[in-house]
Amino acid sequence: MSGGRKNRGGEVVELLEVTYRIQTPLFLGGVDPHQAEMRVPSIKGALRFWYRAVDPAYTRMEEDLFGSAQAGKGQSRFLIRMETSSLKSDVIRKKDKQMLEKLKKLSYLSFFLTPHSGKKKKKGSRTPNSEEEQGRGYLAPKQDLKFSIVLRPPVKGEENPPEAWHSVLASVWLLGHIGGLGSRSRRGFGTVALKSWKLTGNDQADQWLRELPIAHGAESMEKWYQRWLEGLSRIQSWFGDVSKADHTVIDRQASFFYGAQGYGCWDQALFEAAKDLKYFRKEPSHSCDRIALGLPMISQKRHEPEIEYKPIDFERVASPVWIRVVQAGDKFYPVFAILSAPYPSQVETKREGKRIGKFPAPDVSLILRQFADHLRQRQYQGEGGQ
Image 1 (cartoon, one colour):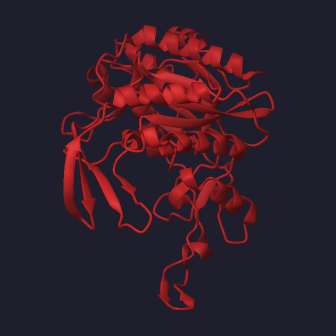
Image 2 (image 1 turned 45 degrees about the vertical axis):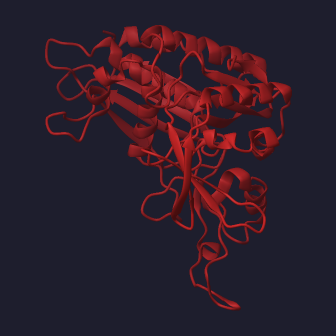
Image 3 (image 1 turned 135 degrees about the horizontal axis):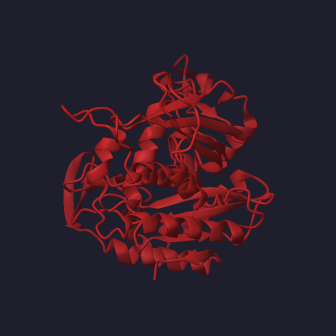
């Protein structure tokens, strides 16, 4: 084991220092939604998600690595230490016309991120201290998010298993290439890009880190994509193929596409992604299939009551389609990741809280392949979805 920092007991500390670049507004708060707050559980939860997405044998390592609240399971194998002193947070207010205009333009993706005008008490009056007045807190783009991961010292005479560092490196890399943090991260908000990382205290783990190229900073989207595929292939060689989608996974059916045209700002790239997603869901041939992109969903035809589509035997179904904004050179590009995820066998419809029917779920795999074809027709480049 290489030299490096040592703890009070004289043992070498295995340490990973990570820097992400915030690419799009990151809406992540604590008790007060008006105050943006980056917390360790948010980072750990996101890392856990992406680890589960690539390791087919995740149940063997997950609780040991990330910890569990179950009796006898103990703490996680690693600690995360945040560096938040340099992070600048903002609050969306009515006077912030530039940000409000961007969110309004992105309303198809942003939903409740846009401040509301407040509930009406009576005609001509509004509630005090409304969202309009206080706004929603967020972390602004173009700043660095830094944290470190420390593996706990193993029992004397033993070493941390290789799977521990494989799992940590894979999850950090994936989060920094196709993931995001906070509210609406599947729809492009909270995009974070892996900018740099450094590992000390374990030569073998450092070698594994060097096998994963950082795509952020590539001078072209083609080079970004090449580095992405190279890193993903390397990670899959560590864990093997995922064959069962009992949660969101990156398997051989996963697809990854990027827009051929770059834009000068993050919001322009995200707006293009919103248009491309909306066009697919609004096409007459796919009007019923859009439930494959997430449930529950509310639909309403003109002059008719709302109809809610809900999964049976599932509380909710998160969208298997992730949107991301990538910067390559001085341009921003929309990126779609189409992953595999479980889906209920039946869907029910409700009107005003009462069930009005149920029907077999659509062929989600077919719909996702059709969405991949839709992206190709709109000049997206990429692989998968065949």
